[in-house]
Amino acid sequence: QLQLVESGGGLVQPGGSLTLSCAASGFTADSYAIVWFRQAPGKEREGLSCINVRGRSTVYVDSVKGRFTISRDNAKRTVYLQMNSLKPEDTSVYYCAAVTKFGGGCGTRPGDYEYWGQGTQVTVSS
Image 1 (spheres, one colour):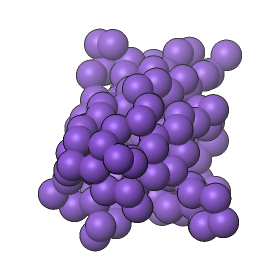
Image 2: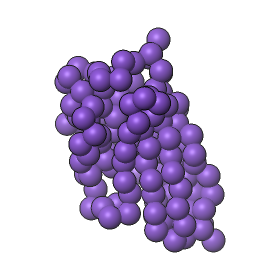
Image 3: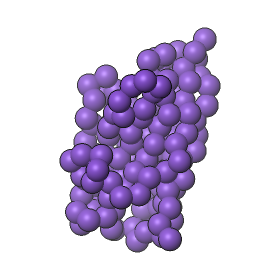
Image 4: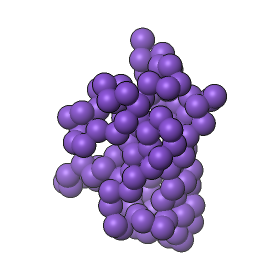
């Protein structure tokens, strides 16, 4: 059974940092790409960054460039999202999702992603 579990969310002050983790089980290490999405109440889901099986990453959103970094540890079957200089507008539920049908490459739209985690809440507030 393929499963993704996010962790690491919480409450942080503006300017602070958090690292989110996405633990994958049931996958082989070289079979999937992972993307981080976020969705705030009343807003559309937003794809943030994807990392392919070779560790090459793509950032989709200008507002997080230079602040958020995606990485993966295939031995631990875990993908991370390091978030620095957090702002109140980063408050959202963060999800990771996996795609296996592109040989370890990233998808181009949310519908490409076959497996989703349950989400973890990130709140940036003083």
